[in-house]
Length: 264
Image 1: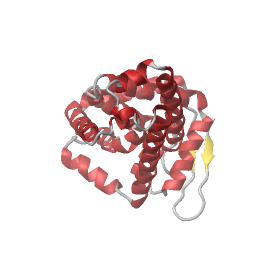
Image 2: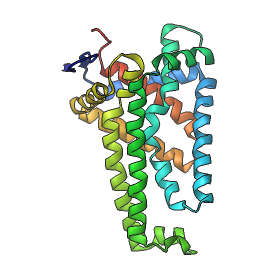
Image 3: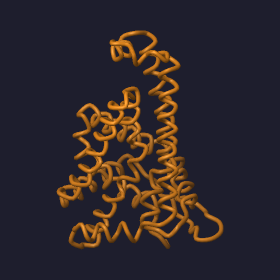
């Protein structure tokens, strides 16, 4: 069964929302892995750029004595991951067309897709990311006090005291709620804006309709992303060299599966 997401005014074409099952999720993961294996160098190279950028931001936070933002920064990576995946969408499109995957081809597709609405969508997710960092800072100082950073047992206080554990529970719960909200309006909006000539509000509304029309499958997909991101954090971001391309390519195929082709 399919559902139409209507848009009104200007360039807001209706998009047919398809049913997505757990079997479809396995299929898009297999397709994502296949794309990654067909162009591993480009996928790892793009992933490496973001791993290096993540480490640079973490080192800057430590240098400026903001260690309490290191974990929220790393955990909030999932909020901006859909925009980061644009390069992987381009690789998947090249493979779909049977074109040779090259940096020139990837750049050309990204350049052609670089519209104002894609930028606005990136701004929305970036804003949510910074709101999450602000909330994390407020929770940290609210639970542990303004002098928490001056303590020699900074990590010990967080991991072993009742207050620290409560902070972790509430902080991660709030982060999960924010991540779920961002996931809802971005899971298909970025690839939709990458491929179609529509505005970012329509793309966001359509993405939410995909989630609400397929709640079970989308919750499983969101949880799977969270698990992979969590494992990547435990690896010191190194695992992102593999998980980021896999999720990027799979997200493109999920978008293809969730929404009927343009003009259908």
